[in-house]
Image (cartoon, rainbow, N blue to C red):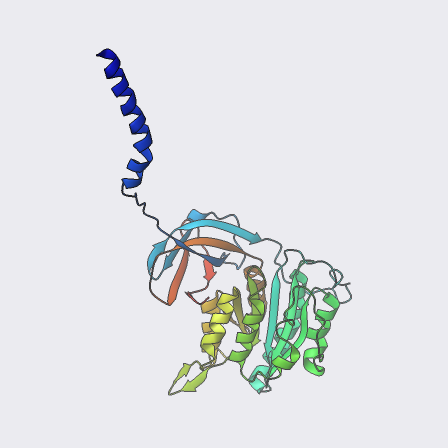
Length: 348
C-alpha cells in the first residue's frame, strides 16, 4: 500500500512539471501602463538689470509654462561665458586666428543689415556700422560671424569667419562702397553652403530673407544669434501694422533653427509703425528689440550680454492636440529678464 502511494505521488509530480508550460501559456497576459512624455529644448538667455548674463542657475531657478500648463524643467545647462565689455577694436590687430583654423564650440552670429536711403535711417545705419566694428572686440577666437545685407534683394558679404581683418573691412568699407563677392569660400560651419549668392539674388522681401537664413542655419548645432540692424517691416493699414504672408514661414524657420533675432532699430524716431515687425520677430524667437537713436552704446552692451551665453532647458511638454504651443519662461528665485522663444510648432 505504501509503495503504490509513493508511485502515485511520483507520477503526479512528473505530470505537474510537464504541464507547467501549458498552464502558464493558458494564463492571460499582464499589461503594464506606459506613458510617453514628450520633451523639448528651450534656449533661454538670462540678463540682470545691467544687461549682463546670469550664469550658475539650476533647473529649480526656472519656471516654464506651455499652453498655460506648468512643465517640469529636467535640466538647465549653461553654454558660454566670457567678458562682454564693448569697446573700440584695435585698428590694426591681426586676425583672431587663421580663417582655416578648426572650429571649436564657438558662437555663430549672423549680422543682417537692412539698407535704406530714407534720410531718417541713413544716419542711424552709419552709426550702427561703427558700433558693430566695436562689437568685434567681444568675439572669442572660436566665434564665427557671417554678414549679409538686404535692400532690393539679399546679399552675402562673408560666410562664417573669425578673420577680424576681413570683418572690419566689411563693416568699415564694403557695406557702403563695394559690391559683395560673386561667390563665397565654403568653410565649416557654413551659411553659404545652403544659401548661395544666386539664391540670395532672387529674394525680394525681408521676410523671405529671414526664412532662408533660418533654413540655412537649421543643420548647424546649438543656438545661433541673428543681429538684425534695420528699420522694420510689415504693412501699415488702417492705423495698424499687419505682417505679410511670408512672416509665418520666417518665424518658424528661425525657431526651428534655434536662432534668436536681436533687432536694433536705426530709425531716428521715438516711435514708427514698422518697428512692430522688429519687435514681433524678436519676441517670438527669444531675442530683444532696441531703439538705437538714443543710448546706442547701451543697446550694444545689452546685445553683447545677451549673446555671451544661454541655458539649454530640457523640458517635459504636457500632452496636447494643438499644432502651435505657447511658451513662457520665468525665474523663480532670482531677479532678471529671461529671453526665450514665445511659441513653437509641432513642425519645428
